[in-house]
Image (cartoon, rainbow, N blue to C red; front, side, top):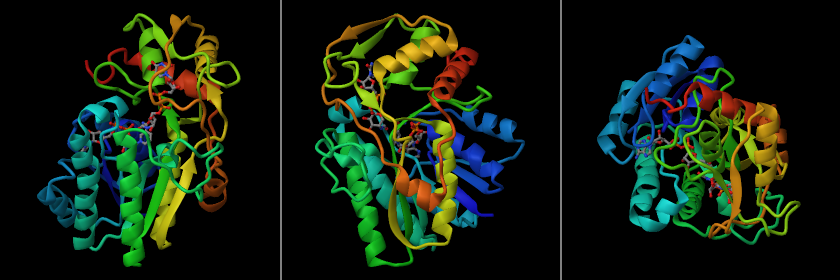
Length: 339
Ligand code: NAD
Ligand code: WQD
């Protein structure tokens, strides 16, 4: 069993990963500045699992926060979720994104070197395949330039980590390229709790369903897809969390830098999401078609064969599970973690 430092562990994917790490018997130390999350998620993680974790409120850009975390705990590996992730916002304030995501990751890797910890799992994204690669995306494709600054930070960090591992073979790094994470823990105790107006499809849709927003705008219905709306590879957050446990365990016994796609491999359209959500949850979601959103690709999805073969990972949740669990979380927590 290992002791894992989880940066950004209070967030959506981080909190679900903490549950799976604790249930697999690992010790967990979370470092999060709570800029996009609340400590309540970690209280619930501990209540759910009946196990405790250590929480440090700190920032990955602060050397002393990192050094103190490594000095106080015998860390074996790091799972690095901490980062800003709003695509639109990254176009308005690029330097904030470069500082938080890129400079923050450099600080983290340097602190790991100082502490002699060389096992790292990084939250990457399918956005690193750029705009020109055909789906299904495969890990050995030449990466492309993402069309937004958020995606650009993921590409830069991936490349930086790869070069670091080439220069020093003590490093063992996993690049997990997530597709579109949705869903929530089956209990409904933890889930996605975006600040302000959600940018992403699923939290927007569930907020419409719970009566917090008037209607869902479906961005574009004239794409060259099965029904004219965009297609994405939606992945249940618990399957994604399990991939992190497998990846971190894999890194403890391997070296080098390796990328894995974490998606189901199934393209699902936005309209299919809305219609299936209504059917599974027996609820009507007000929606209308509107203009395309700038920067959206018509369709992308994963080839996940490498993660299946090398990590022994298989997604266990189907689309109905994803939509039932998203709704279960939102219904039980209409205002998220806020009382
Ligand atoms: P999230 O915002 O819920 O979680 C990120 C966490 O990092 C938050 O708790 C936030 O407070 C923390 N954080 C941000 N900057 C920090 C800093 N400087 N120091 C310490 N903590 C900091 O987001 P999420 O959806 O859980 O995403 C986790 C990671 O996965 C992010 O790196 C994101 O870019 C990546 N990712 C997310 C998606 C997605 O669709 N959710 C897809 C691909 C990749
Ligand atoms: C999905 C589909 C929209 C909202 C983004 C990042 C990516 C990754 C995941 C994050 C699109 C449509 C959405 C709405 C809609 N990383 N939509 N109405 O854009 O595929 O991916 O999040 O960390 O890097 O780019 O996800 O959920 O925003 O959109 O019709 O109100 O839903 O047009 O086709 P996306 P999304």
